[in-house]
Amino acid sequence: MELGINLKQRNGLIPKLGIVFILFVATINCFPQTDTLYLHSARLIGHRGGCNGLFPENSLSSIHESLDFFDGVEVDVFMSHENTLWLSHGQYLPDCNNKKWNIHKLNDSLIIKLNNGGGQSHDYTKLDNVFSFIAKNHPDKCLSLDVKAWKPSNFATLLTFPIYKKMAIKIDSLYRMYPFCQLLIESHSFYFLNKIKQLNPDIKVCYISFRNHRKAIRISMRNGYKAVSLKYLNKNNDFYNLIPFIKKNNIIVQAWTLNDKNEILKADSLGIQYIQTDSRFIIKRKKE
Image (cartoon, rainbow, N blue to C red; front, top):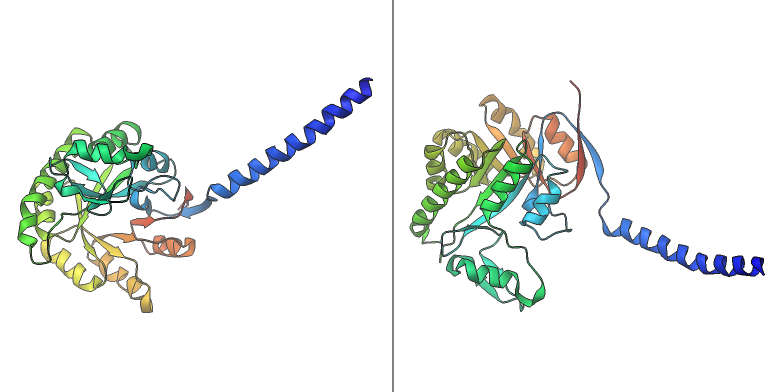
């Protein structure tokens, strides 16, 4: 009788163990595998909040999780109709029906309504919440802001000047209120970068370049910028050929977006200071 009960228990246990094993394998496959990077001095920055597909990009939830891995995060910033700075890679925010809304024409209450529409949060995040979180929980980390201003056409650049001025003043105010290790700001607007430099020399301003890096470096030197933000282009190794010239002129480099482990290690060995990535790594420092 006792043996029969044990057999029944054993027969019931086998399917349960099978379910546990399947759930374990599924969990491993759902979460990206984390490799280890041994870096000299480069700071590895999580691109678009370092979400890596696990959380909404440019969100506080992705930043909260990513700063346990990265040396810092990069986020994109736009301003609402009420002059509030929000994280977003594009100027249009989708609602639950995937209709696009121009963030510059939205009040904050409408952005919050869009965020919570359809019972599923997009995790739209205010920039002041990011500054507060990093200053309180990760003051040794850095934050890189890709600051953008909406314009109705390519010929309406002058219309962005008042927007950029307001954004510069707000960002400077936030950094003074919530200080942390390092703030970098990248933009293609000379007006905005010069305004930031005027307001707060402790902020590293980076002229951003998508293709013509040599021109961008000359512009940075002419305007007295301390840094450049360069899109990674490996055609004919021109990206790396520029590094000796950049180092000779004491210009800080933020490179984006490097996802291959070997490319990141190469950039680190050449002395690139900030590297944005979409990949997830455990960072360890090499001893000199």
